[in-house]
Length: 369
Ligand code: OGA
Ligand code: NI
Image (tube, rainbow, N blue to C red):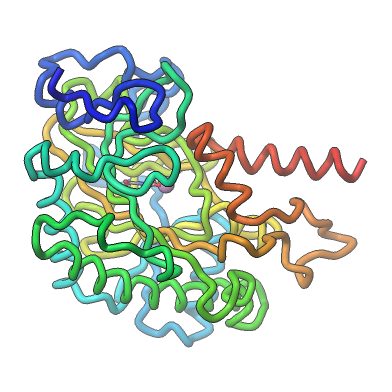
């Protein structure tokens, strides 16, 4: 079948692009993409009756970033990170023109002919390149989405050769985008530190200090799906890294955040970044800030593109609860582990809700009992 590629590149079975499935499957999606009933969007998302009348339900907080040095901004970030683990950053300083250029370049990549895209097919060793699955367990459920994954920092592992060369605007747009988004991550990191009552540079230091931080980009492409109620673009997961800056399509919804057991659909503010806490900051903050489960629904009418920029601690520094936040009243909830060690589990097993952090926690109780 022409849509199968690179079965020999380390994957347990031939990789099929969701884009090809979407083009050829007609009205019924293949069994592999059908989620168990309790995970389906249709059965787990009560439709808020009010929304059809234009009254929107609860939504993640919106934080104005135009005055990052103000106490008010630090408090707003703190409250969002404690209660939701998510917020939308507006007036963040990254130019709308650059956001548009990054989005349209990546849309352009997913519109290239299959032969062009397949030149960059990835393997489960590094995941760098064009991919359609996370995790190497044979026969498991698959998500309704393709992606492109690449490294940005440290610059020693950044390699333009592994980035698409088409469309021709892509490399430059991605470079510029990443420079600006890293700056924004540093600003937000400082706000998050101050929100914890610490010096603004404290989280940055815990990430490995000057030149230590890591960054990578996962561009998600969710093709149209004839049965969106049966599947997910990305199943429920928390982000393993430090923090995520997500740029989504302004007009297609899809991201859902779990809040008090309910799935809340995020209403994207045009050109905002959706910022969320990842597992590493949950650990560093000793669970003051929450790395919250989220998932992606897909649409029958429209494809959707998102750029998830992951800002991570240096891969070889031990990450554990910061000593300032640990005391008799608040014992350390997690053992120390490097991000490299943490990532090994995810690369083998894929993302799975909050299972990875929970397993760390049970390790802690076993070790201390
Ligand atoms: C992710 C993610 C959300 C989206 O890539 O980790 O959660 O809306 N993406 O694409
Ligand atoms: Ni995510």
